[in-house]
Image (cartoon, rainbow, N blue to C red; front, side, top):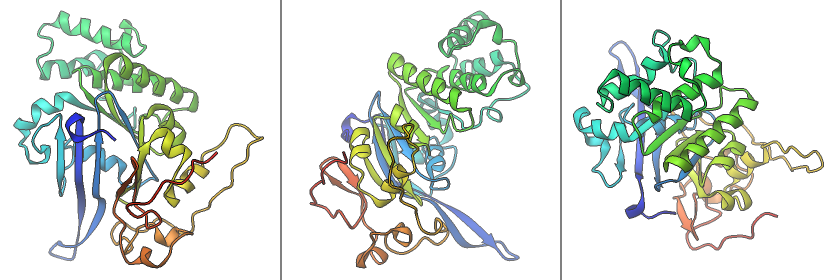
Length: 336
């Protein structure tokens, strides 16, 4: 796990509680604990995969980092900066150029009234990266070519493109300001399977050529494995396991991670995996269970699980939040 001094992005104890107002006077009665103490780091040129079931807080985490949502508390530092969560909008402006987002839905993330050229050139105008119309057009053509599109696409509107092409336009828009970090919020989940592979390979190629760092948010663990260097598993607003890609897939420790990996389809019919069906439903983030949040669905729970919440501890570079592996434990043998 990269150290803080060498990290591009450092997130510590990030929290977001959404208020639930009830009654005639709209008093706050409860909170939705969407993100409840998330910590991780991303090194330059690294991709951290953030995976988990729908509703676990992955997308909210990404938007909190970019200040698209205001966090309840926490610390986010970019390349040694002060806490971004405490900056004003004008103070955040230089960091917005360095951190961009690729949205999940390529249909709603593009303005239908703007041509592709206007969509990509707008950030260039805002940040003053290309002063003349000719410079902006040349830069737009360069970006379209980088994502596999052509110059004649500049004058077209989003409705004239397929879903995969629209996502390529979204990627070009994110690249236009030359960011260091891109938060990819489930960028392929709305696309056909054949197109998903093309977009993921494009992101890998751009990372290698431009030295980008990604926070890659997804629920498909096979795609996360393909693109990520390290993987963090989220459950009900908290990270329960974080390790290098090969380490996590060969030696998963948390029972929740075991269940997620067991659900990944295997393309070889000769190889059968033992399924691990999770009991019950995901608890409500309004009133998460006491102790370990996963214990109501865990087949390996024992006495302290329903009373004490396990901290995220580092066991030989493999971070795990589970009473089965207290601090000082030794790692088991990898799964064959």
